[in-house]
Image 1 (cartoon, rainbow, N blue to C red):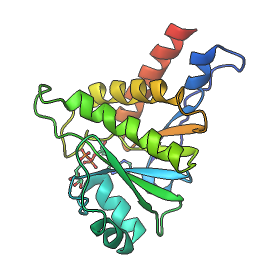
Image 2 (cartoon, rainbow, N blue to C red; image 1 turned 90 degrees about the vertical axis):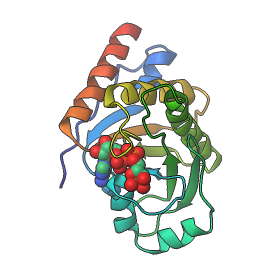
Image 3 (spheres, rainbow, N blue to C red; image 1 turned 180 degrees about the vertical axis):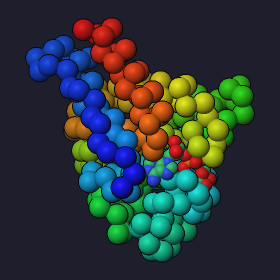
Image 4 (spheres, helix red, strand yellow; image 1 turned 120 degrees about the horizontal axis):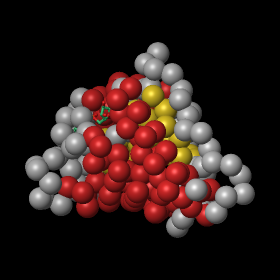
Length: 195
Ligand code: AR6
């Protein structure tokens, strides 16, 4: 088992709207393929062809029917996402986000990464999926700086959750300790600012 659960402490109940949004976020160190949520989010490529990293792990766990379904979808532009069945994974559905390849920051990477999180929330809401697990999209093979990506992930999700009240819980699944610490530190900083 890769890592253990470390959830971000929820702010006390009865706080203002911003603080209750924070209460819908959790940071967990571990493997996304074992998460019991309505939707597991994948960090895919625009061809929606099985790759390495978290995408490889999701395909391995889901089984070959996943690629068969994705082959009927016909790809996905960067900054957007597509939905599929989850097959052997424990979630109801999978949401495949295509994050940007890091090219130094001047090629719309921030906007495209935010687009992934925003469109995943939209799609989840449309399909009645209330709990989501996100990996740190683009921060592996695609080379996006992890701290910059974590800020964008958290800011975009916090902004989006206000618009999608049916989404109850977002889990940021961090594969390593350094990424989990990064998310926890950022959330603690935001929580302090909003206190
Ligand atoms: N559970 C959670 N997080 C994971 C797991 C896992 N099982 N495995 C890796 N990570 P990456 P990208 C983390 O490279 O940068 C593929 O080939 C990893 O440590 O998976 O968006 C696709 O097909 C990192 O923090 O995705 C694309 O071609 C994060 O997941 C390309 O890679 C994202 O790393 C996408 O690259």
